[in-house]
Image (cartoon, rainbow, N blue to C red):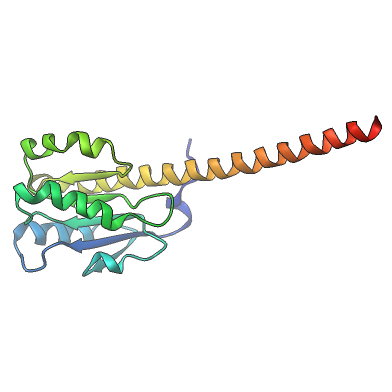
Amino acid sequence: MSTPSMFSDRVLRIFYWNADPRVVDADRMQLEKLLKRLGDIKLTTIKSLDQLPKDGCDLLIIAAHSVPKKEFPKWLMGLRSRIHSSGVIWVPALILADIGFEVLSEILTEVAAENWYFDIIMPLHVESLPIRVANLLRIHDHLHELNRYAVAISEVSTKVRDLEIELQLMKSSKE
């Protein structure tokens, strides 16, 4: 059984940003080659995060494998604050980074407290790109769906409240 989703009615908008364009290496070249093979998406390369559209996008893919391990936690939290959208739903991100367990475990508590979905893919695991992209896109779609439910519930609550007021007025006019 399939459910309606963002995948069936429009082209997915994925943006790619290379955090350090001075670095051209095999990892970056492999990522960019695989991105071109992802399928029915609109892939847009941007030179800075300022180029992200105001209405957001479906996914942001970032090449950050040249960010030094010691600086990665600070860089990641800075990235989070920079891509915070003006809307309710943040843009999910897939980050290519060569970061080990120790660095990631240091930021676990801080990352878990955030309301932002992202994944970090090691250069050695870049072949798993399609599945990771699909997972983040589905999460983003689910967040949009939850937002649509919240709007619908709010509208129904307003209608119920209006009907209750109308009912009270009818009762009081009969008395």
